Length: 417
Ligand SMILES: C[S@@+](CC[C@H](N)C(=O)[O-])C[C@H]1O[C@@H](n2cnc3c(N)ncnc32)[C@H](O)[C@@H]1O
Image 1 (cartoon, protein in one colour):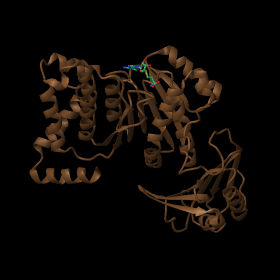
Image 2 (tube, rainbow, N blue to C red):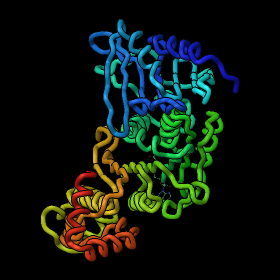
Image 3 (spheres, protein in one colour):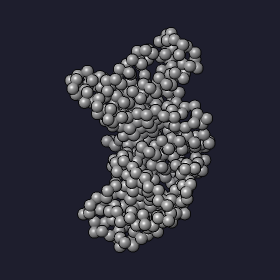
Image 4 (cartoon, helix red, strand yellow):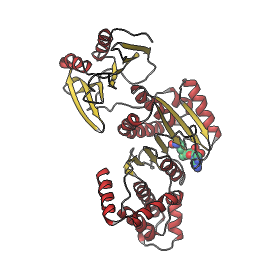
């Protein structure tokens, strides 16, 4: 690619950053050869409309630490000049009409690539403190092709909204090719929405995204392939097979992001187990029905009023299953939060397990809680059966570890949570 004078290339970037009507977002990242690395790994810029008027929002990221500065429009030029003077090696700018990539070469020149943009994010200031910016375009033609209704579109928007704060750290850590998998993808609404969003985020870091939707049903996968072709989406594919044995990428390639939306009953457990075995850094799973544990509670005989009535038993089984899943994931090195990802008006299955791999040592109290719940309710959850070998290793480690080391492990795990 031909090079150009860095100062004039940065002047082009400056003009785009100060065009508040058309700017969507911009990211400065990477470092230049032979100069002091920038203080912050990444700087992200986007226009926002605050009550006090249009602002340029600047996010400074260093690892997990993020600081934000909202700059009034009148002061934007001076701040943009400061940002352009930082020694980052790349700028990625998205406007309503185009994408500009600037890379600083070893010799200190600029390589610039500009392309018309097919993206959907609205340009200009976003009313951050009044209207939430959409991460998924509800009018994306792909949804029409796939036949997604309003509730499904809202679900995938809400799902991607949960992904948004956690994915950047994973994308930073990933190699040049980022891999995502949607297990039990069905009609692939989430697969498409997550792929579009992650591809933009990966592109901003000069990384390539590959996404695979996995399902046992060939007919839904064929629809997904057709929609991907029609939308001209690169890097998105579909693989037929059971979640338990899924190998969606080439040998030795593992997903960085594992998603599962309403994979039926124990298919969610298969998805979580698969993610653990891959060592996936980020796992988001919104479970569907929980029949497995319900059946076991019934089979275990009288367990008192909490589960005597069918409706209460059903609700309780949901809670118990997800509590046990969370404990299993924590024991196997994940930080876990169980959250409501969308209002129940749009789906009664609105809980989500958000799991980030920390590699923390297992904690004895988590194992005691897990064993206690299983004993009390007479259940053996599917996830524990899927990950029996891994949990056995945890038991041995906790039993065999000298007391001093175990306390250290507990402290590490506490710090990671
Ligand atoms: C309720 S649908 C949800 C589909 C999609 N994730 C969504 O939210 O629209 C569950 C999907 O999981 C698939 N599925 C269920 N068990 C599976 C398994 N063990 N392996 C692969 N796919 C499975 C089904 O074929 C179905 O398409």
